[in-house]
Structure formats: C-alpha cells, structure tokens
Image (cartoon, rainbow, N blue to C red; front, top):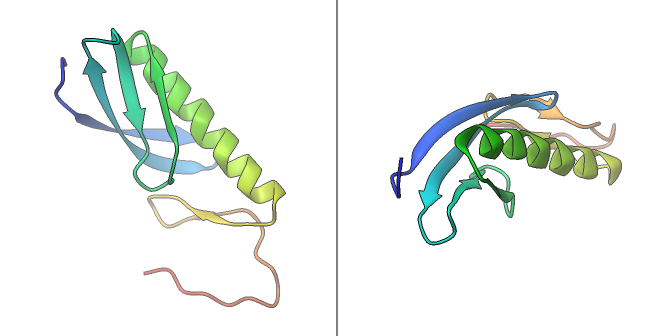
Length: 92
C-alpha cells in the first residue's frame, strides 16, 4: 500500500465515515484523512493502528462538536448532535 491512497469506511458510535489512508515511506507511517470532517487527520504505525486512530479521531471530533451545540452529518447523511429547535435545515 506504499503511497497508494485507499478508501475505507470507518464505523463509529457517531455514524460511518469514509477515510483515505496511504503509507508514507519517509515517515514510516500510515497517514489518514477524513474528507468530510475538516482538519481531521491522524496516523498509525500499521494499517490496523491507522484505522483505530481514525475511529478515535472521528469520535473525538463529533463529541467536541456535540458539546459545543453543533451538529455533524456523517457520510450516510445521519445527523450527530442535537438540533436546536429554532433551526431548520436541509441535507442534500
């Protein structure tokens, strides 16, 4: 999997998210990006560890957003967090 980016779906307590994982030879690590969650990146020494770290990072991000009263929509369009009663929105 060296330098080839592969997509995986990570299932968390907050829904399912697509991640992109690739191996960085210079860092000797598997790097992870979560396209639907801005700024959520992580890494692991192995592919299995990278997937575990991705799950942890996604859950932490979603928990923090919920604590701040914000919502997150997962890649299957499920809403995570509490919606304020005064707000109406649409997900396309």
